[in-house]
View 1 (cartoon, rainbow over the protein chains, first blue to last red):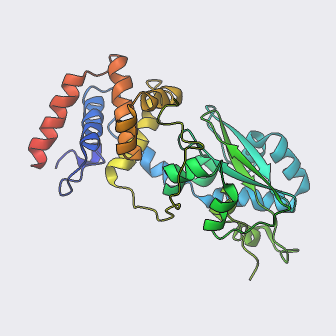
View 2 (view 1 turned 120 degrees about the horizontal axis):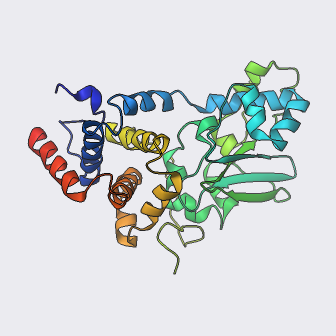
View 3 (view 1 turned 180 degrees about the vertical axis):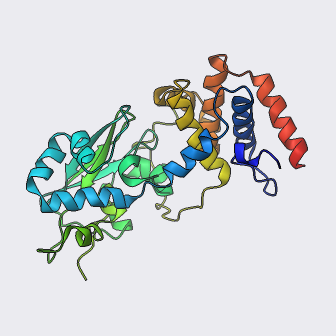
Amino acid sequence: MSDDHTHPGLQHDVPLPGRAKRAVAIHRLLVSKSIVGPDEVRETIDRAGRRTPADGARVVARAWTDPAFKTRLMDDPRSAVFELGYRLSRDAGLAVVENTDRVHHLVVCTLCSCYPTAMLGQPPDWYKSFAYRQRAVVEPRAVMREFGLHLDEDVAVRVVDSTADLRYLVLPRRPNGSEGMPEAELAELVTRDSMIGVGQARNPA
Amino acid sequence: MPSAHDRGGLPSREPIDQTSHEWADWEHLVNAMMGVLRRHGLINVDELRRGIEAMTPAEYESSSYYERWSASIEHILVEKGVLSTEEITAATREIDAEWG
């Protein structure tokens, strides 16, 4: 079709749900009325795809190696991540919560799916699932066990519930045995799940 | 009674399904279109949420994530007079005709 480039989302060979078709129709109308530019959606898709958990991992690794940066990150996340080149949208605040050997944070969004996408990219499907949203606030330890995370009973668990105005990034515990590792290698130990709180950072090989 | 979107603490014994699906093109489209509409000042995040939260519980629970977004984007754009339900329906029919 001649206008495929202006209408990403066309999959002629796959039956689409009604709401999907209506979204494609809405996009087509917005473009034909010049309310949005023909390439804006495509460009936005490309840009969104460039954000991954590696971005959050860079921030965590810097916080592990630079105590002054960590202090700034906890106090004013927006300015601190800007030092590393990340510009957060003005719509939503970011809070960083630190996991220690005494307290462990788990992030959920019970109302929807709010997530620090600027730092982690798109949330995994399970983060948006009814089961996770319903259970995380009631039985966080059981939920974490399903992800393979078994916390000692003397570690306090704090569940933080995100909103459209405030999203959370977990600063995971730095793994034992990682002393002296360079920042770039440390970043590879930082998993997406450890920055949501359903996991820990990996141990060094 | 809380609205359908307010899931925290609702009883569930369902295990967390940790598999991820590959996004269909239309899901990328809906996600990105919302970003574009936001930048143009046509729908903000709170309005998107209001549109989602206005869905009936049956509609909310039977829709996939981006089907909810699609429903909300339509609701808010029509409410603001940016597009009409009739022209969206007509454009949807055109797509049906083109794709068979």
